[in-house]
Image (cartoon, rainbow, N blue to C red; front, side, top):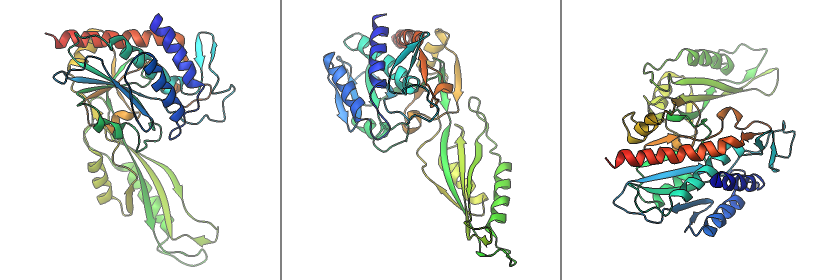
Length: 355
């Protein structure tokens, strides 16, 4: 309960500090100060704060405990002050409480719990990362090269403490359909809007044959179409935004190559770095989760998992359905449950790897 009380206090403080992506320096300051007051040596890279367990041994594998301290901006549906932590009916309300403040605070307590133990079969590295919500360049990807070699990562996100053993990747494509501009009164065989309608229909019929056991099919969704400025002018081009969720049977580059060859338009990916990920089901961390009765699933949502080329799982208290919603909250009971389950999982992993 001591850890739960400390985690709750820390989470309340982080809620009260504005920490939008790219502007999370104040929460970075506070996390750094909090760890230093625990006599834990900390390091900082831009707004990423990290620490390494006291008895680090380069001959042992290292586990990364990671979650992010940036948030999205509050939406207009809030009925309470998003930066004022309020406890009501055993719930703690506040922006970032669920995504992913509770995971971060629980992982910090777990790191404190194991920090000065000298008999572990692994090292622990804590990383409170920045810019996760906007996939910024100064987030986790920029820090990994500065850390000791990581063998396994536990990414704290709201999963109801179920283990996400795979996560879909994401590519946002800008499709540009070109044609010929003209007056609407004149005949035009090069109207790009007609071309675009055929491309949208084609996208709806594209199927990728490899289906993932945990993540299902690759999913393509047209989310935006923009063209034209006047009712009587045929535009010269149509812009389409395509959201592609990639399973772990394909790389992002493979999906990009396929679409580029299939679609009769310019296909421009905004980013190819957010790849799908999965971990073998015979990995020690999965065996540990199985031994303790954790539920497993494949996650359709994106996290910092997509930015690291490391064996990883996504696991944390809270519920993804609450993320980015008005009057965001967590149940106070989820704090204690999260800390205990993280510690139990690492203890079981330690036991398995000692055999």
